[in-house]
Image (tube, rainbow, N blue to C red):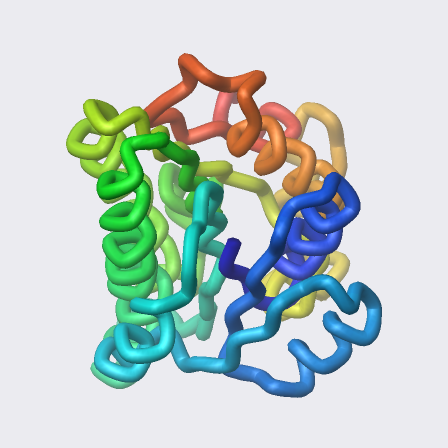
Length: 232
């Protein structure tokens, strides 16, 4: 299981509580240190997933992985007319390319063992709705949704299920970047039938469902965790 902070951290802790052997991957050693302090059974791995060669070297001998959560993401908000090449490349490298690469590494092992597995990609409602100043972020999440579907198609014959969760804003550190202003937040929550943003636990519970045997026939799904935003 691979994760970073926020939703990924909460997912790692939840899986550990259920008895899973959890490997947590992030580029920030301090995040790993605090995670291990909270749950000593979690195996920490420090690597920048945007670095293809180093990720390959670090993860190729990681051992058996049956469940994978791709949660690493970055969001640097800019108006469309001000998007820079560096921002574009960094966002796609982390939000899409790293997901493809880590999933390749893990899926090769799943296929070789013949025991199947489950992969969950953490996407966003931004994959399906245009949001001001989110041109690059929305684009990466749209790409991630389609990558999820192609992975489900090609890996399904090996009994490897691939799905995504697509939350509305969650007040993690990254969520606060875009939605901490109360007036701006109201423009979004007013369009959510439940009238609020998601809690971290709302997303974690959906991830756990998609990882579990309770979703054995669920494959290639983009699951909204958005209080009805996309439905309306």
